[in-house]
Length: 70
Picture 1: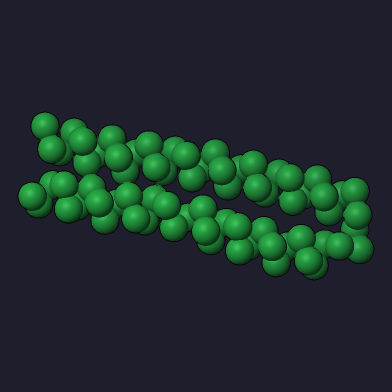
Picture 2: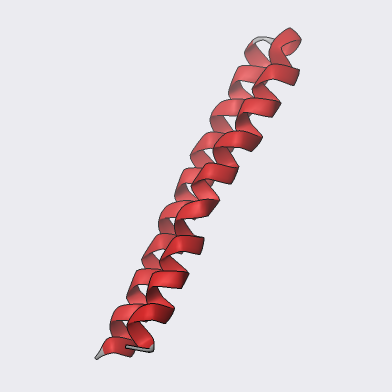
C-alpha cells in the first residue's frame, strides 16, 4: 500500500507541475506578444516561477521515497 501512496504522490505532483508550467509559460508568451519591450523582465520572472513550480515535484519525490522506505 505504501508503494501505491508513494507513486500517487509523485505522479500527481508531476501532473500539477506540468499544468502549472504550461500556464506560466503561456501567460508569459501572451505578455511578450502584448508588450515586446517587457520581454526581458517577463522572461526572468518566468524562469523564477518555473523554478519554484518545479520544486514541488522534487519535494514530493523525496516524500515518496520516505514513504516507501518507512
